[in-house]
Image 1 (cartoon, one colour):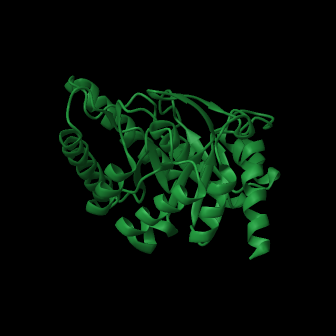
Image 2: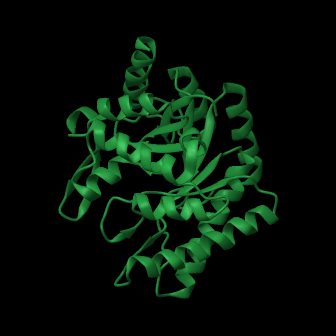
Length: 279
């Protein structure tokens, strides 16, 4: 992808219908150019419907990704929950690939009482096996574990960069709001540049050319993320963030998860384009 696209987490609020095809069409009508299909409560889209979503996306030049169901924990103590988690990721990947999704996003695991390196090894094994299975099936889609917003969740920036550097078919989903909420920091131009420098250190220029990003305003406390907020009603330094993106010439997709979805997506797109005009 040779540009930076902006869009919404799911069908825009202003869409006349809630289905994904209407969402794609509304994204294009708004002047946005990507959308994340949200399978948050289960993969309920069939193959035929997925083909039609893919046709709409191609017709409207809208890049798609998919978010797997929320309840995933590859470090569960219960084997059936681990197997169900893997199935949710794989089902999302298979359907997402039909409509041309470039990546499947998911929250990988909880630490429970395990040390980080133990959970890292467990998650790595699962992702290695799932990536191999997708390749065997001829499915071209990236597994994108997401940086998480609470200290109880596996998924720091470094954990995911290290894993992505080790595994083919795996790249992070960079949720800048989660990183800010988790650390109570990471919310300035200099810190955002530091994050992008780390991406390049671990993944090279390819990492900066193939980014999938989540952004919203966010409320947080000592334990991290509480809820998403509208950008201008939060402390998120989105101007500094977008400046860092421009300075590092990143490429890929930016998905807005603010409660007002398309309004903040358009706001970020506008700020980015102003910086482009300034050179």
